Length: 240
Image (tube, rainbow, N blue to C red; front, side):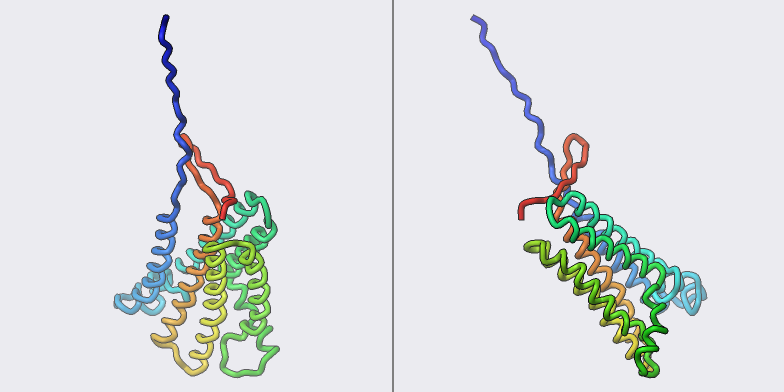
């Protein structure tokens, strides 16, 4: 009689891919760019870093074509794409993810082209306040309500911490964009253009980025990313 031995080979189970480190890097770059925008003209006295020096203009969020704004646009595009991908994979409430992706894409276009600032003339025709540079806020309130409803539609369908990431991101994004812009207008109306104004300006930009990162987190938390034999698989996380 010959003894038989059976050897079973078990395939290793797919391993989840952690993207938390990527999130910390995105947060770190956002904070670093904001700090550099404030610190370069304040700490370095050089023709390139003061007045209209090339380095200051490149890092200054108040200038056109600056690096911090480019970064903000990139975050919005990344988040919009991630929400769209999540919508493709989601077994339910796909439309809410697609609407959110479309709104975030529109916000990236607005950030890149300063579209909201072109509403100044519309706002001036509606109100009679003098010396207030934020007239776009008047029609912008209605736009903000549309954005709040569109993104809130998704937030109410999520659960647990994912829902709070979406709600917190929406609150930070709109609160920074509308609230901080209003404060800036009031400061300029009072003739304040010093350190306090600069601080509020950068708080607005950083707050918007943090809000977008929270909404990106909401999408990532809704996905299940695994690695199996060197291949990445992405699926919708169906369990709470």
